[in-house]
Length: 89
Image 1: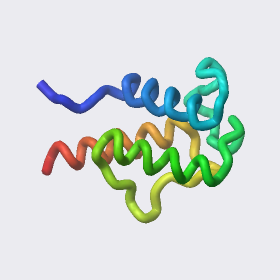
Image 2: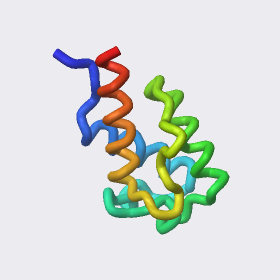
Image 3: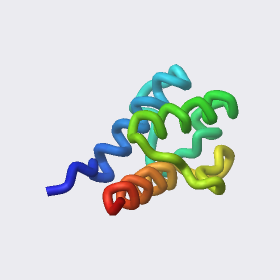
């Protein structure tokens, strides 16, 4: 049994953090949304990435999520991959 959260749990957590950070309705955040499209400023995006890293105990790669073009789903995928790599030790 794995302690790694599934993709939906990761999406729900990230969407919740985005909603709080951007002060927007959680229902407006979709997998295909980009942070820029849903009104997250670049400063808030950086803080959000740090918050996500801290929450999950991971570190994004140097060429990690791209604020302007990556979707929420791509962010979820990066987190999922980082968690899988962490679980493998």
